[in-house]
Image (cartoon, rainbow, N blue to C red; front, side, top):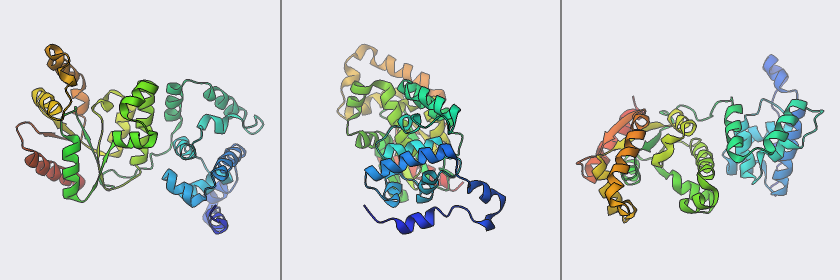
Length: 312
């Protein structure tokens, strides 16, 4: 494990006498957070990770990890969960066994969280996390998300426009598969929709910590309102739309014949899905209609639209 003596000495210098009253408050360790920090440090030690290595893995700062392990500050539940995930741990287990004498209410809450179903845990974490999203200004950070039905061109046009603007291109489903080691179909088969949505939220929050990118998301993200709200708060969003007939023909052209399995009802189903989601797609910061456009025309229009959003 990397020697972190110097890191420990500098990162735990959280407050000094010259920082005023606020610094004096932050300099007092919290007994409950001390216990949580000890558990996190134990996980980090077991993984033989320095603070620097863990910070890079979790996408968090060394200062945050030092504060947490030292028992200082009002630690964001979301950031704590991100850190524990990076250590292959479970947030409920990290906080569950802490002595009631440190904080009876927190110990009781942790006990109940540890036994809650996964969907309930995810909702609790969202409700408890009152801290900022730590994602900065979405325009200044140059983060763009493309929403819309399958076949709208999110992946193809996203890659082309990102290349034109000098931005990275990221596909959310690809990140979910990379993190889980499973394909999307396998995730649904093994863990169901709730499992997929949990992974979707986790990866979206990780990606939102980055800057300078175009992100393509699955069309159904708008059906999960908390996740979609976070997406809109963290990214400039563009709805790529087209006529239903074009959506269908593009999906089939990609080699996916599943829409034709029930050919008589396929178009009606597509129209029903679009009607159910249209109002949510329309909440995007901008809309681009790709109907009757060549790939090159749509890519140029999207790049121009994204550039205008980022510089408005």
